[in-house]
Length: 136
Image (cartoon, rainbow, N blue to C red; front, side, top):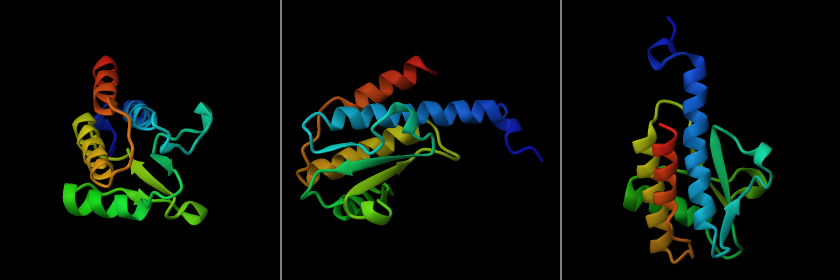
């Protein structure tokens, strides 16, 4: 049983994960314009196609963002691991998901952050959608 055959083969799956990861990373860069958050990977070659870790400024409770995203917007994200616990959030973009699911998750995460008063830049969803449309 080739689980990748119905998805166009392994290279198509890897390309999809790369495309979805890029959309999330583009959104995070937009959110980070006010300076309250940034990609944890500081160099392009360190970015992963599986999960994006977002480092938060001091005073922003990552666990509260995770809770509000889940309870109010039905989006499950992770908090940081190890020394990043409570200081970062993680958005996964690998597995059986598509562009619409990623855009929905980004909307829920942004809504959670905005409802908590986290300063986020505008245009993240639009930038992610433009990227996804251009790379479809």
